[in-house]
Amino acid sequence: PRKLQFEPLEPRLLLSADLAFMADPGGSDLTLRVDDIDGIETLVIIDNEIVDPLARVVANQSLADTSAVTIIGGAGDDRLTVDLNNPFIVPVRFDDISAGDNDLLALTGAVDHIWQLSGADEGQVDNIGFSGVEHLFGGSADDVFQFANGASLSGGIDGGGGSDTLRLDGSGLALDFTSISQNTVTGIERIDLTGSGDNSLTLTALDVFDMV
Image (cartoon, rainbow, N blue to C red):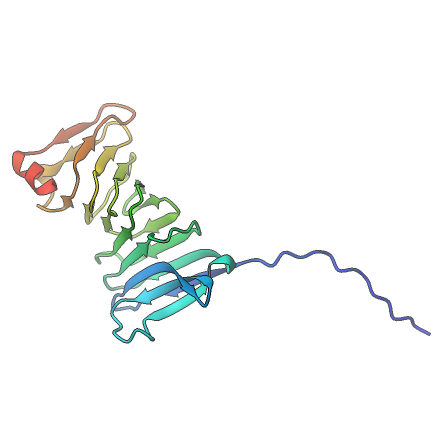
C-alpha cells in the first residue's frame, strides 16, 4: 500500500507588489504620501479633485508590502505631488507618454533634493524617477536642479522655498534666459556653471528679477 509522505517545502520569498495607478485621460491632480491607517504605515494615492474625503483615496497599499509605485499620466495635464513630510524610500515612477501637455511633479517637505535631469523632460530626484514631465516644483528646503549633456525641460522650474540652485553638470552647455518666456524659471537663487567643461550663461537684469 502507498504511504502518505510529507516532504519539507523549500523556503519561498513572498515578493512585494507594486502600487500602480493610471491618471484620468482628461488629467489628474494626485498626491502620493504615507498615512497611518489603523496603526499601519500605508502608501496612499489621493485624487485632489474629489471633494468627498472618503472617496479621495483612489489607491492604497501597506508600505511594507510595496516594492515600487508606478503612476502613468494620461493625455491631459497631470500633476503629481509627492508628500515627503513623512519620508519613504520606496522607488516611484511618474511617466507620461503624451506629448504637448503640461505635466507637473512637485515635492513637499523640508528635505533637500537634487533633481538630476538626464534627457528631454526626464530625470530622477531621490527615489522618484520621471519622464514626459514638463514642469518641476521644488520643496521648502534647498533644491538643486542639475542638467547633464542632452538634458532639457520643455516647461519650467519653480524652486519653491529654501535656497535653490540651477546647475549645468555637463560641458559645452549654453543657458540662454533671453530665449525663453518670462517666469519659466522662478525661485532660483543660484546658478552654477562649473560642470565638467566650458558652459555659458546669457541673461538680462529682468531675467534675474523674474528668476528670484
